[in-house]
Image (tube, one colour):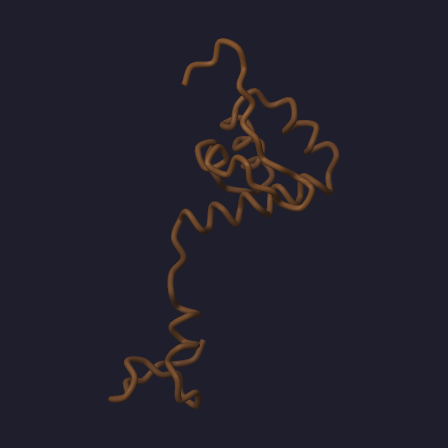
Length: 105
């Protein structure tokens, strides 16, 4: 990682770049929500490639169950984040909430 030095015309500049935009973009922390959505997208992509994983997900009863399956294979997102992703598509997978009889909202 480049060492940063202070310049009067720019708040933080990497040596030799003359610009702070690239350094700021690479050091801006990502929110937990953004990281969880990336994890969710990566999990859905992997699910397309692995029939056994897809079968486990399709038999899951709740979004929290799906999140636990994902955690077991190295992905981190919550059931709530999965539900908020409902209606969106990643590759050939569209996330949809199943309304079951007797379910409380």
